[in-house]
Image 1 (spheres, rainbow, N blue to C red):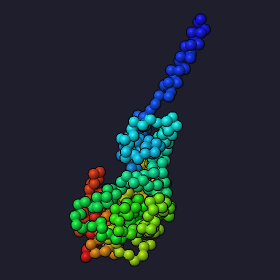
Image 2: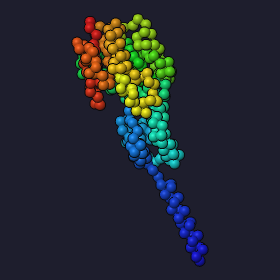
Image 3: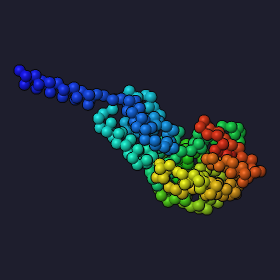
Image 4: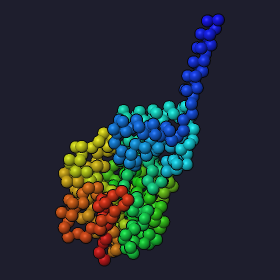
Length: 312
């Protein structure tokens, strides 16, 4: 009798453990537990997500195959054991390597539009996308999207801003330039994915140097603007990205200066330059005290993007 009781006890314990092991977990539960791991590890969020929960939701959504922007529609979805394992592996890789999640997944979103990305190009994150979507809210009648027929995207990287411009300005042809041949390979893949190779022309070279003799209604630029101190203190995540995509020289505005100085030659009368400069506003206003910068703010930025309109 004692032996049978012991045997029954062992069987009972095994069943209980099995029940615990197979208890269903939802997408929301997994995102929350993953966020706790990321917070505890002290990772840096600077690549399309602003905090641990947003990044966890991004990783969970991509693994389960739905749009991260619609996470609230899927938070109750049950996650399979294999999916849980995949997500936990990604979270551990994010923590141990500090590699940006966008590189781990080869995916990034801008304005809800997906793009391919890998280490050959900087992970896209720009306030210019929001301003382009708003068709330059705040500029009034200066810009008419329907009348923009030619756009230049400088320092295009993976071409995300050029592609957004193609969607937002339906009558425009876009030229996109980058110094990096590797980045342009990523850009070329994105053009193919979005079916825009006929509207966007890629050029390899230094800013305006490789361009034909065109004039543009709009020049957009998200150039390198990190100063020497910032370069020395980049977080580990950013060190996976091409250094040339960050390095703006000693004061951060070496490349921005060149863009400002050359832009008038390439703009149509009434056209304009829209440029992101990070924290370089004080340095720019000191260097160009008489230049009428119009600083455009977004929901998450203040004084990081300027507009300069060409004179007639």
